[in-house]
Amino acid sequence: MSAIRNKLIEMLNDLPEEKIAILLDFAQKIKENVENDDEELSLQEKEMIRASEEEYSKGEYVWWRDVKRTIV
Image (cartoon, rainbow, N blue to C red):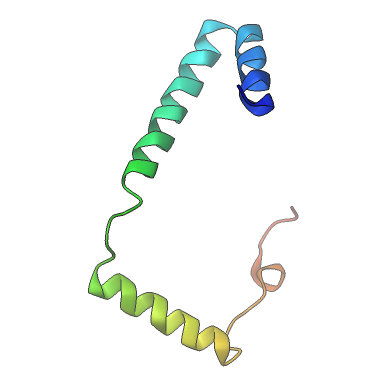
């Protein structure tokens, strides 16, 4: 077993059941997402990506720090 997996198991052993239930739900969502990663993009989604890449290449973007509304 990998060191990361062993560390995760070690951490799980120290958590109360209600926290483990939250993590289980999160892990299931991650697994579902991985299983759907091969899903094709729609034509509209592909066009949106193409357009945004074109805008970015032209320098048509704003920095996050210039539009954020709270101190992070």
